[in-house]
Length: 147
Image (cartoon, rainbow, N blue to C red):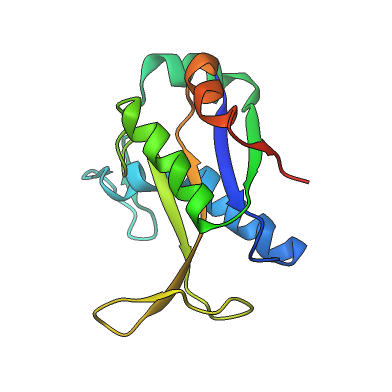
């Protein structure tokens, strides 16, 4: 199993910004589940109890394994959107199997879109949950490793 992350090359992100966006993409599948998994039972007001439900294969082969990741580059937003189309053709679902990472544009990026609250964001990456190699390769074969 491997976690696939595809980051946009056209944004010319600094190394630190790129690292932060890739980190967001890597954590997205876990942090999404963690937000929804808060449980009762804490006798300590300074802690939050979370019970995660991971697919057994992800737990055994990735979480308890070596956290294999492949970081690929998309030339631009359109090419990143092609990765989304491939994922959807494979039956993968946004918010469950893959996550769109949008920067809040507080530092070096300019907003590409503005939401109904006036918040500007730029799509930087797509992060996938750990996938079987065969599935990850069906998506990543259209992209080169990030250089």
